[in-house]
Length: 116
Length: 112
Image (cartoon, rainbow over all chains, first blue to last red; front, side, top):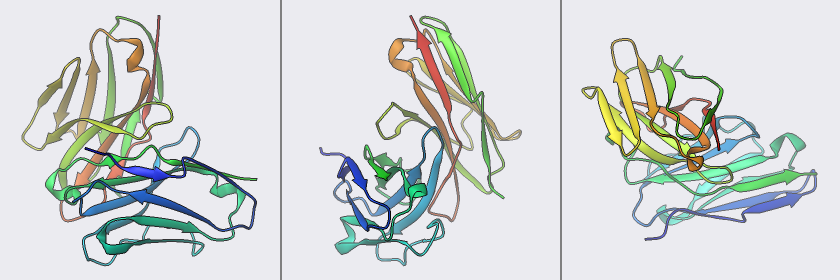
């Protein structure tokens, strides 16, 4: 079946503009995660959605970052007033259950964001 | 604070040789540990999962070990191939929490 799909694959934007990144998780997966990966660095947790529970937003770096998940499926990550330090690859992952049950994370190939 | 540390940061080996990557963690309470492989420009893919009671698990040429007492895991790659060139990420999950703790990864380069 189809894996996690992210769009766009690449996005170049000017400093100060808003951007929206989209994630289509695997159908039926209840958990959805957003991570950020700067060049040559590890994955940085941003936000986690699990079913109808309130999302865990503890990793969002500033109030310019927000995310929503509509209908328990598609998710969008929005970055307002982008800054050059926001340049990174934004990865989305979904899993059948939250990690306490050992389900693997299935990652998309990410959106490479470049802020000029 | 939950932490996952991986070593070495990077490694270069010749095709056909073996190598071992290390992962030390302070995550508690421990639920499971996964090793992921991330090819350049792609998202990570799960290689293997280790739970508390498991010491060794193999997946083809990849063998993961876990010592829950010392909180250490290793990933051994046998007879390396050029396609093994990637970043290998150790991820530890805790009970009663939805998100996991990621190591920074080991970048492996296999040269012909």
